[in-house]
Length: 84
Image (cartoon, rainbow, N blue to C red; front, side):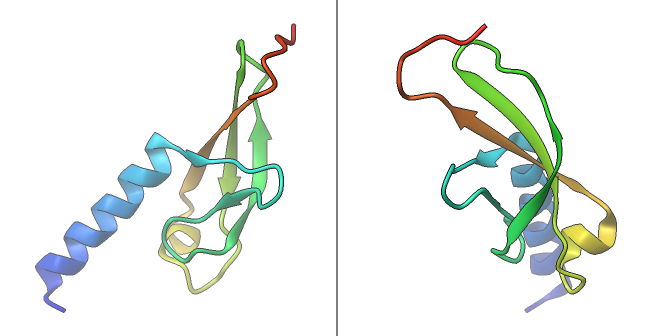
């Protein structure tokens, strides 16, 4: 793999982490770089039917962990019941 391809891959992973991954009640948020479950760093309040969380990967071999980057996750309430 060329250094240019690696750079593109790293930028794509970082963009995905910043844009947000899906948060699952069952599986949590999965790190887009290493596919391991990321630990919750911060949880924002519900905004309508959406809740934003920030995570950190705890895999010491992962690029996002080594770079100290956070991973945004988005959880959607699919029950249709609004929370205040």
